[in-house]
Image (cartoon, rainbow, N blue to C red; front, side):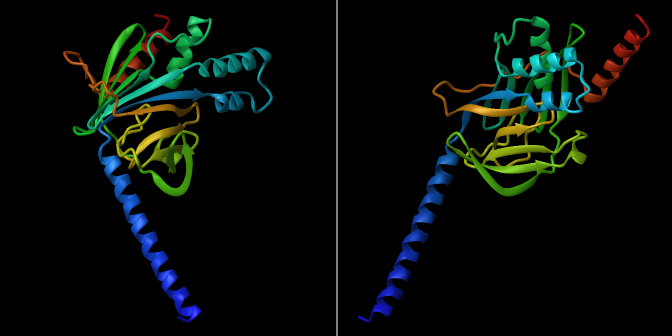
Length: 258
């Protein structure tokens, strides 16, 4: 057989094998993804950008510089956890974790990195934030807001998962910078840190906000112990508008010296 004919047949066979391989790999990925029914993710936190922004103009006093530095350093000891099943999730600080030698600093950093405990129900399209303000517990219920992410082809590895970059324009959030998320399509659940849920085709393994960056340090899928989300019951809830109104009242009382 002429060499050029052998080359043509070889190329055709190689293309056939490649197509079969890609189809098989895609099938395996889809099967594995379909089998993910629950999980637990641990996120580390960095507030280095918060520190840099706080002192970038060079006018920060030594005391203010020290405060920003202590806050960013304390954040390095923070760990937050996300528990999820196919319908619900809970995102919160790891309980009992001491992050510095100063209780006030602990509370400040925890407040800056999460307003409280977030419960999410994807099926019902609702989210509940359980938080404390001026010594009182508030349970704020809201609908999951559709977030207009721009999906890109940029990708990077986080742990053993291939993640893709998504951008949420600052005009959609009211923040002073765009929000950046890296999500893993092979973990097909729309959960992530704080209230960034319900809009991306995969679990968020890294989230960059102006004040902090959350990066998954460990992911445990389908743990042996069933993941059950104990959604708070028998509680008094309020809307975001009612919570804001309550905060305005407290602020007015403080401003009036009450």
